[in-house]
Length: 189
Image 1 (cartoon, helix red, strand yellow):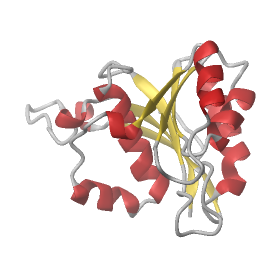
Image 2 (image 1 turned 180 degrees about the vertical axis):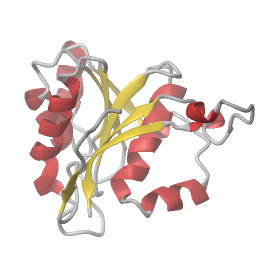
Image 3 (image 1 turned 180 degrees about the horizontal axis):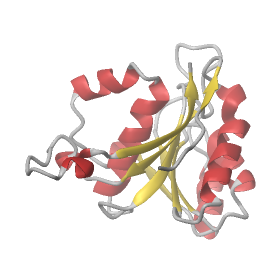
Image 4 (image 1 turned 120 degrees about the vertical axis):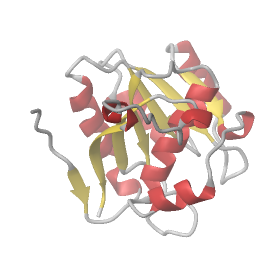
Protein backbone atom coordinates (compact mmCIF):
# COMPACT_ATOMS: atom_id res chain seq x y z
CA UNK A 1 0.00 0.00 0.00
CA UNK A 2 1.25 3.43 -0.90
CA UNK A 3 0.06 6.44 1.03
CA UNK A 4 -0.14 9.87 -0.45
CA UNK A 5 -1.44 13.26 0.47
CA UNK A 6 -4.16 15.22 -1.29
CA UNK A 7 -4.15 18.99 -0.84
CA UNK A 8 -7.57 20.64 -0.79
CA UNK A 9 -7.67 24.37 -1.52
CA UNK A 10 -10.41 26.40 0.16
CA UNK A 11 -11.37 27.85 -3.22
CA UNK A 12 -10.35 27.43 -6.82
CA UNK A 13 -8.43 29.96 -8.84
CA UNK A 14 -5.24 31.66 -9.86
CA UNK A 15 -4.00 32.25 -6.30
CA UNK A 16 -3.30 28.47 -6.07
CA UNK A 17 -1.03 28.32 -9.13
CA UNK A 18 2.36 28.38 -7.44
CA UNK A 19 1.34 25.93 -4.69
CA UNK A 20 -0.15 23.56 -7.28
CA UNK A 21 3.07 23.59 -9.31
CA UNK A 22 5.13 23.03 -6.13
CA UNK A 23 2.97 19.96 -5.41
CA UNK A 24 3.62 18.76 -8.97
CA UNK A 25 7.35 19.35 -8.52
CA UNK A 26 7.32 17.29 -5.33
CA UNK A 27 5.48 14.43 -7.08
CA UNK A 28 7.99 14.52 -9.95
CA UNK A 29 10.79 13.90 -7.43
CA UNK A 30 9.67 10.27 -7.17
CA UNK A 31 11.19 9.90 -10.64
CA UNK A 32 8.57 7.62 -12.18
CA UNK A 33 6.85 10.33 -14.25
CA UNK A 34 8.61 12.32 -16.96
CA UNK A 35 5.83 14.42 -18.52
CA UNK A 36 3.48 17.13 -17.31
CA UNK A 37 0.44 18.08 -19.37
CA UNK A 38 -0.60 21.63 -18.47
CA UNK A 39 -3.62 23.71 -19.45
CA UNK A 40 -2.76 27.35 -20.11
CA UNK A 41 -5.02 29.85 -21.85
CA UNK A 42 -3.11 33.13 -21.44
CA UNK A 43 0.36 31.72 -20.77
CA UNK A 44 0.32 32.62 -17.07
CA UNK A 45 0.41 29.00 -15.87
CA UNK A 46 2.92 27.96 -18.55
CA UNK A 47 5.24 30.80 -17.54
CA UNK A 48 5.02 29.77 -13.87
CA UNK A 49 5.61 26.11 -14.79
CA UNK A 50 8.75 27.00 -16.75
CA UNK A 51 10.17 28.60 -13.62
CA UNK A 52 8.97 26.21 -10.91
CA UNK A 53 9.54 22.94 -12.82
CA UNK A 54 12.82 23.93 -14.52
CA UNK A 55 15.03 21.64 -12.39
CA UNK A 56 12.83 18.54 -12.70
CA UNK A 57 13.84 17.43 -16.23
CA UNK A 58 10.15 16.85 -16.94
CA UNK A 59 8.82 17.58 -20.40
CA UNK A 60 5.94 20.05 -20.29
CA UNK A 61 3.17 19.70 -22.85
CA UNK A 62 1.06 22.86 -22.80
CA UNK A 63 -2.47 22.62 -24.13
CA UNK A 64 -3.81 26.06 -24.95
CA UNK A 65 -7.09 27.44 -26.24
CA UNK A 66 -7.37 30.08 -28.93
CA UNK A 67 -9.77 33.00 -28.74
CA UNK A 68 -10.06 33.41 -24.96
CA UNK A 69 -8.73 36.57 -23.36
CA UNK A 70 -5.52 38.01 -24.74
CA UNK A 71 -4.44 34.63 -26.12
CA UNK A 72 -1.30 32.59 -25.67
CA UNK A 73 1.84 34.70 -26.32
CA UNK A 74 3.82 33.67 -29.41
CA UNK A 75 7.06 34.57 -27.62
CA UNK A 76 6.27 32.16 -24.77
CA UNK A 77 5.35 29.42 -27.22
CA UNK A 78 8.76 29.87 -28.85
CA UNK A 79 10.59 29.82 -25.48
CA UNK A 80 8.79 26.63 -24.46
CA UNK A 81 9.77 24.94 -27.72
CA UNK A 82 13.38 26.10 -27.41
CA UNK A 83 13.44 24.58 -23.90
CA UNK A 84 12.34 21.18 -25.26
CA UNK A 85 8.67 21.46 -24.34
CA UNK A 86 5.61 21.30 -26.59
CA UNK A 87 2.59 23.54 -27.16
CA UNK A 88 -0.62 22.48 -28.88
CA UNK A 89 -4.05 24.05 -29.07
CA UNK A 90 -7.21 22.20 -28.19
CA UNK A 91 -8.95 23.34 -31.37
CA UNK A 92 -6.33 21.56 -33.49
CA UNK A 93 -7.27 18.11 -32.14
CA UNK A 94 -10.70 16.54 -32.39
CA UNK A 95 -11.45 14.26 -29.46
CA UNK A 96 -14.35 12.08 -28.45
CA UNK A 97 -15.30 13.45 -25.00
CA UNK A 98 -19.03 13.06 -24.33
CA UNK A 99 -20.85 15.83 -22.46
CA UNK A 100 -22.05 13.43 -19.77
CA UNK A 101 -18.43 12.59 -18.94
CA UNK A 102 -17.47 16.28 -18.83
CA UNK A 103 -20.42 17.06 -16.59
CA UNK A 104 -19.54 14.17 -14.26
CA UNK A 105 -15.92 15.30 -13.94
CA UNK A 106 -17.07 18.89 -13.35
CA UNK A 107 -18.72 17.60 -10.15
CA UNK A 108 -15.20 17.04 -8.79
CA UNK A 109 -14.12 20.50 -10.00
CA UNK A 110 -13.56 22.29 -13.29
CA UNK A 111 -9.86 21.47 -13.22
CA UNK A 112 -10.57 17.72 -12.99
CA UNK A 113 -12.57 17.87 -16.23
CA UNK A 114 -9.82 19.84 -17.93
CA UNK A 115 -7.04 17.56 -16.62
CA UNK A 116 -8.68 14.53 -18.24
CA UNK A 117 -9.49 16.50 -21.40
CA UNK A 118 -5.92 17.75 -21.97
CA UNK A 119 -4.49 14.24 -21.54
CA UNK A 120 -6.95 12.96 -24.15
CA UNK A 121 -5.97 15.83 -26.46
CA UNK A 122 -2.22 15.21 -26.03
CA UNK A 123 -2.65 11.46 -26.54
CA UNK A 124 -4.81 11.86 -29.65
CA UNK A 125 -2.24 14.36 -31.00
CA UNK A 126 0.49 11.72 -30.62
CA UNK A 127 2.41 13.58 -27.89
CA UNK A 128 1.73 10.85 -25.32
CA UNK A 129 1.74 7.08 -25.67
CA UNK A 130 -1.33 5.21 -24.38
CA UNK A 131 -0.50 3.67 -21.01
CA UNK A 132 2.13 6.27 -20.14
CA UNK A 133 1.57 7.87 -16.72
CA UNK A 134 1.68 11.67 -16.68
CA UNK A 135 0.79 14.49 -14.36
CA UNK A 136 -2.09 16.62 -15.66
CA UNK A 137 -2.49 20.16 -14.33
CA UNK A 138 -5.44 22.49 -14.89
CA UNK A 139 -7.64 24.91 -13.02
CA UNK A 140 -10.73 26.96 -12.60
CA UNK A 141 -11.06 28.74 -15.91
CA UNK A 142 -10.82 32.51 -16.33
CA UNK A 143 -14.42 32.99 -17.42
CA UNK A 144 -17.30 33.56 -15.04
CA UNK A 145 -15.29 33.32 -11.82
CA UNK A 146 -13.52 36.33 -10.35
CA UNK A 147 -10.68 34.20 -8.94
CA UNK A 148 -10.38 32.11 -12.12
CA UNK A 149 -7.36 31.48 -14.25
CA UNK A 150 -4.16 29.78 -13.21
CA UNK A 151 -4.09 26.17 -12.02
CA UNK A 152 -5.52 24.55 -8.90
CA UNK A 153 -5.91 20.86 -9.79
CA UNK A 154 -3.29 18.17 -10.43
CA UNK A 155 -3.69 14.44 -10.99
CA UNK A 156 -1.61 11.49 -12.09
CA UNK A 157 -3.33 9.89 -15.05
CA UNK A 158 -2.64 7.13 -17.53
CA UNK A 159 -2.62 8.46 -21.09
CA UNK A 160 -5.41 7.06 -23.21
CA UNK A 161 -6.89 7.90 -26.59
CA UNK A 162 -10.25 9.65 -26.38
CA UNK A 163 -11.96 6.92 -28.42
CA UNK A 164 -10.85 4.34 -25.86
CA UNK A 165 -11.68 6.33 -22.71
CA UNK A 166 -15.14 4.83 -22.23
CA UNK A 167 -14.17 1.32 -23.28
CA UNK A 168 -14.11 -0.86 -20.17
CA UNK A 169 -12.22 -4.12 -20.09
CA UNK A 170 -14.83 -6.77 -19.35
CA UNK A 171 -12.51 -9.72 -18.92
CA UNK A 172 -12.47 -11.10 -15.38
CA UNK A 173 -9.35 -9.93 -13.56
CA UNK A 174 -8.87 -6.82 -15.73
CA UNK A 175 -10.49 -4.32 -13.33
CA UNK A 176 -7.12 -2.75 -12.51
CA UNK A 177 -6.79 -1.66 -16.14
CA UNK A 178 -10.02 0.35 -15.93
CA UNK A 179 -8.52 2.91 -13.60
CA UNK A 180 -7.05 5.76 -15.63
CA UNK A 181 -6.99 8.46 -12.94
CA UNK A 182 -4.32 7.08 -10.61
CA UNK A 183 -3.80 9.85 -8.05
CA UNK A 184 -5.36 13.15 -7.06
CA UNK A 185 -2.58 15.50 -5.94
CA UNK A 186 -4.65 18.62 -5.28
CA UNK A 187 -7.98 20.26 -6.03
CA UNK A 188 -10.31 22.94 -4.69
CA UNK A 189 -12.95 21.89 -2.13
